[in-house]
Length: 262
Ligand SMILES: [Zn+2]
Image (cartoon, rainbow, N blue to C red; front, side, top):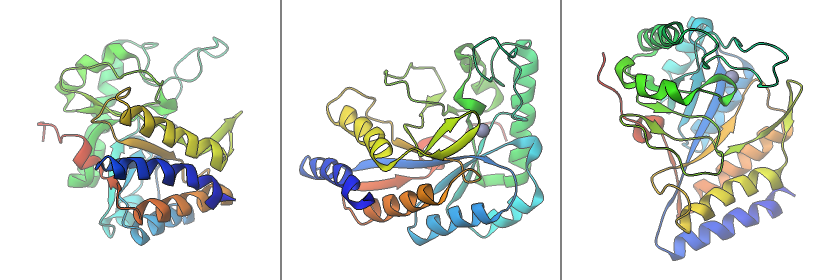
């Protein structure tokens, strides 16, 4: 079943091949805090297929066990997943959950980001790439202009299908294909057809000049929520793409710049 649905992706990669181009993907995984069997599964796929994995880590919940587990991995990178992954939007307002909105004073939100960045930088050193991955994929765009001053050089949220706004000093690279479907906080595999379609839609938009050319296609997982079908898909995707010459997976450090604040 998966192999058949994967045919649409292989077909698209053939078009890239014929055009003499290489389709670039990147893997973002959210909500890492500690070592776990699910994290082991993720790191196993990363090392078996030599795919960089870019983990959005929640700063105040990050445990020493995560640092120790990642220390032995050549391909794991760490991104800033908000601060405490706490919702500050009023409940029942219909706007969903927000940590990085302006429901609190701007200064408080920026302090959180700065503190979070310091925590991850001191825990993970060079493995930390100063990119904000907002919890629930939501960030108020008016925060962007303040990020370079905090040493934060990128943002990764959800892809809306539009061209990405340009912000001086901030690279914006969304996650285009979420492997999970979310219903009332309960996650399950979104299905091969849907995930493959999301990836192919972005690749096709790029190939036809309708999406930013410099933006790799983001594949999004949440290792703690992945069911068996989602892991099986990730394995198959990894195998299909790493055995194809017109496809390459990027590390966050090669997508985003490192920033100047030490
Ligand atoms: Zn999250």
